[in-house]
Image (cartoon, rainbow, N blue to C red; front, side):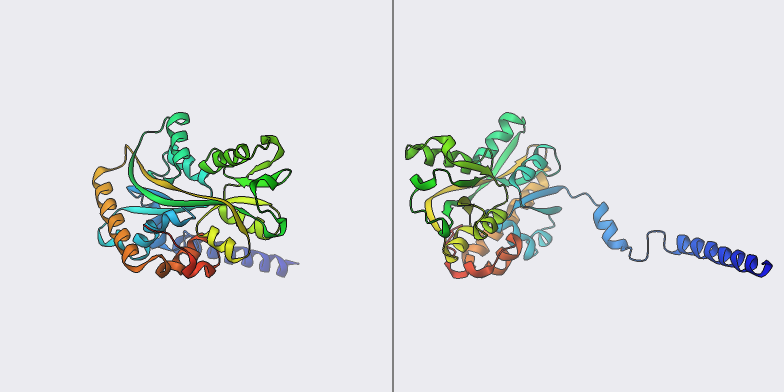
Length: 278
């Protein structure tokens, strides 16, 4: 019995000593990366929200080609899959630059009282893509069908414009809120939606997969910055953005197929078929 007590006491002592040594030499754990922690603690002067669509390509190129680094732009690029999340982050000062749609920009000003400066306009082609299995060839056939569109966006407005234009009652079409176009694309492919508004590269990808466009149009996304953003950093950011645009025009969008597919988390099948001009 006494021997057992000694063993327990020794094991307790060894455990305590081990804990003390661990606490002294590894205060943040074995896998602690000091450099990563420093980077995390650093608050960039500019934080930009980039959506998962073709409008964000200049930002991705500027980051991927280290243009921001070469011009010493103090920036952090945050990828978003939900436009509403990105807009709320902008309104709540979590990011101070973002890419958004024209209707969402109006919403920011009117509803969130957010002041911003427009830095640039970017291509934002869009289309209402119909599931090929739904066998829809016209908007009129959307009656009792499910159509996805981002809430309070240009796509949402266009959905009702299309419904009105063919004389359908608005409540005869189920317009559902899907804010992530990658998710909408997957739902279309899995026959969970009859139709959905999509942007590029998802439009081209949907066509390759056999889905058809019931309606298509072009608009311009807005690159905006909060009025309280650092003007010196914004000037350097603008230089980096302009350089990225030059490279895209020189190399062509197809050159960035892998980059677009990676950031949009989709198949690179769109490749040479993706036609967007910057």
